[in-house]
Amino acid sequence: MTNLHEEPLTSAHLEEADTPEYVAQKHGFLPIETNWFDRLFISVVIWVALSLFWFRFLEPVGMSIWISNVIAFALTVFIVTKG
Amino acid sequence: MQSNRLGWILLAPTLTILFFFGVLPFIYVVYVSFHSWNPFAANPEMIFNGADNFRRIVFDEEFLNSVGVTVMFVFFAVLSELILGYILAQAFMKDFPGKSFFRTIHTLPLIMAPIIVGSVWKLMTTPSIGIIPHYLDEWFGISMNIGTSAFAAFTTIVIMDIWHWTPLVTLTLIAALVSLPPDPFEQAQIDGANKRQIFWHITLPMIAPAVVATVFIRLMDALRTVDEVWMLTGGGPGSSTRFVGVHIFKEVFPKTNYGYGSTISVIVLYLTIVACWLLYVTMLAPRNSKEG
Image (cartoon, rainbow over all chains, first blue to last red; front, side):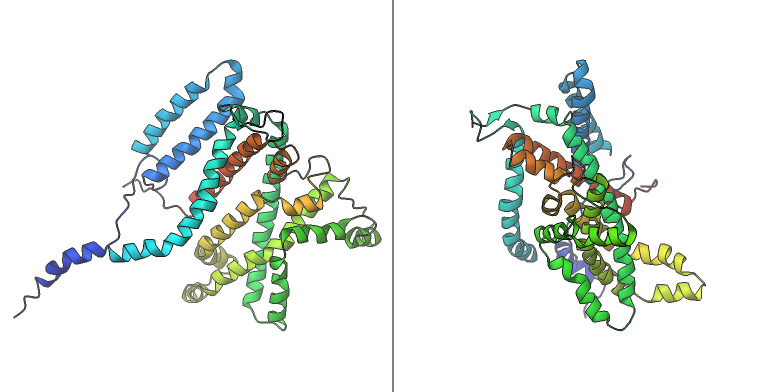
């Protein structure tokens, strides 16, 4: 006689193989659900915007673009890890 | 695992084409954007100049003006197309005599090449020979000249774009409306909801993905409009219809300034991606819950 309770367990590993890989969604301080690529994308968008802003308003008064890059890099690390 | 492999095999032709015609040119344009390159100048070499092109672009009044004009054009054109497209889609959901004929006629502008649309509208709006200035003058006493009036030129381009692309919006919204299940609408009617409530609380949320997809397509298209405008006004009078696409064209072809033209292209691509992403986030992205 077949043990009905064992059947799902015996086929469980096969079902697991068919299940698509789950991309982890993170709940951070950003108002939307994001994965690591979303957060990297947001960081790059901010990096470019900050650089253009810096070129227009802050570099003419003597502040190097490298300051902007350091701030943007720190923001990237913060957004990717905590966002 | 096998189905995964089959998926990659089926995707391979598309990905290959995308790589060679999308990704590689993009990487090349980004590379060129960090160079000063005018192949027809005394020194035709490509010279690396760091971020100088990007430093220049933020002070380029012509470029900033073209961005402003483009944003205004996109706002008026896409919004009008969306509203008009929805009204037409709702009209096509009902039965009326000559519906099929009208639907065919209404989609005809879609099959016309933009350069032809520009030519036709140029013929129609040229003072002294065009039908539009003629009847505007005869019926309303309005003198229309897109060669001298910035307002007339800009308005004509917006109307031309609406005429050309509203059928696309109509078709996608018809597809979305047809696929809606009837149950929520029947239940809302039984509960006593009026037409406005049904539109805001049932129809719009259910067709939101189709609306956003349509706006994406139109937004991206409108941001890179060149040929129709080039044919109709050439960016004038003055710089009133000098959209970013036209600005890039003038920078790259008549001036052969490939490096700076690439920089403008990269920035326009950046603005397009940001606009689409913001639209996606505000309309469709899943929200973060406090509990999570």
